[in-house]
Amino acid sequence: MVDHTESGYPREACGLLLGRFTPGSGMRRVADARPAANLNLERAADRYELDPADFLRLEQAARAQQLEVVGVYHSHPDHPSRPSETDRLRAEEIWQDSESWSYLILEVASGRVASRRSWVLRQGVFAEEEIQILPFRP
Amino acid sequence: MPVTVRIPTPLRPLSHGRDSLQLAGATARQVLESLERECPGMRSRICDERGEMRRFVNLFLNEEDVRQLKGLDSPVVDGDILSIVPAIAGGAPAGFGKALRGIRD
Image (cartoon, rainbow over all chains, first blue to last red; front, side):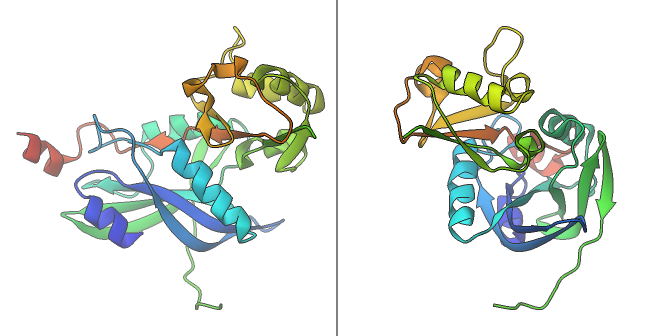
């Protein structure tokens, strides 16, 4: 994910977080992050549009491993890792009143990941969620 | 054997958590009508008031985007997989992306 967003700089890069929801806790365990194409070539500096064919392919691959899509990541080149109004509006179209999956945003400043924060949309408002990095357990 | 409809996470509250359903129909539109009967409220999340697909939703028949086929009138046969795929998009506030603008300049 870091390599993908840094190598994509100064364009926005995006991808999916694959893992499992933990029922009742609101926690999502991410096992893998997979890149997808950004179809918005016109405004790749400040917009992303995740290729739906990539979504389908990655979701099928996840399903084969008993995983599912638990979130989306994208980069903000030279901009803080907090959701923009565009992020909020596009997420709200998908989720409406439901609680969303995770939206992980990576700030890429001058080609290097400078910060990463994760957000959940609830009732049309983004709230930050804690990120914990756990030891790898195969 | 009916058509399998794959439900993405954002729509699962309407399918009682199910990630796929087996439904009947001869076209994508008819399958969505079956889906609406099974899961009320689903159609309005996928189609607009005119009954056409919303801009922010994609529908794939097996591996192909139905917009590249005959849209909602695309014929389906038993064993097909119809996948509802959310259009995921967003981005930083306009006016940022200075480095890319520098390249364009």
